[in-house]
Image (cartoon, rainbow, N blue to C red; front, side, top):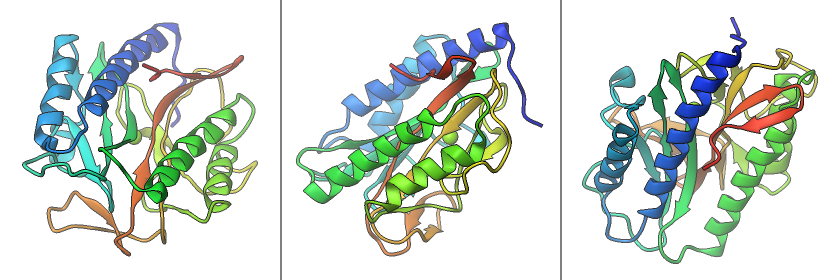
Length: 248
Ligand code: MG
C-alpha cells in the first residue's frame, strides 16, 4: 500500500530530511585522502544525534554503521571501517535520520582529491539523472515516467543502471511502497499523488549493469570491477510539482 502523507506527517518528513541532508553534507565535506570511512561514519552519527534524531540505517537489517560508504567499484551498502580513502577515489555515502517517527534518506558520491575525467563525468551524469527523474515526479505521472527518464539519461551516455536495487517510498518506514526502479516504461506503474514521498536513487555503472554482493553480505560491487556512482533525494509529490526534502 502506498501511504499518502498528511500535513503533520509531511512536516515530520521535512525535519527528518533536513537532518539527513545536513549529515550527508558534513560527511561529504570530510571525504579526503587519508580519512577512514569509520571516521566519516562517526561524524554523521554525531551530527544526527546532536539534532535529537536517530541514524535510521544503524541496525537496519543488522547494518553496523550510520552510513553506507561505498568506494569506486562498490555500488552501495559498503560498511564503514578502517579503510583509508585514497587520492582519486570516488566515495558514495548513503545515510538517513529518523525523528518524530519519520525517516529521511539521501545519498551522493564525492570525489577524494584529484579524480579521473572518467570518474567526474560518471558522477555528473548520475547526479543529473537523479534530477531528470525528479522532474517527472509530478502528480498525475506514473512511477515509470521517473524510471524511464533516469534510464534514458544514463544510457544515452553509455552508462548502465543497476537493476537489482531500486528507489522506494519513504515515511514512517525507511522503505515503503512503491518501488522506484531506475529503468522502466513511461506511463506504467503506480500513479503519483500529492502527499507521496519517494526516495529516488539512481545507481549508475561505468560498465555493465551487473552487480554482486561480497562475502561480508553487505557490500554490493560491480561485476566488471568498474566504477559506480549513486545519488539520492527524498522527494515530496505536491500539486505544484516535486519538492526535494533533502536539499541541504
Ligand atoms: Mg534509499
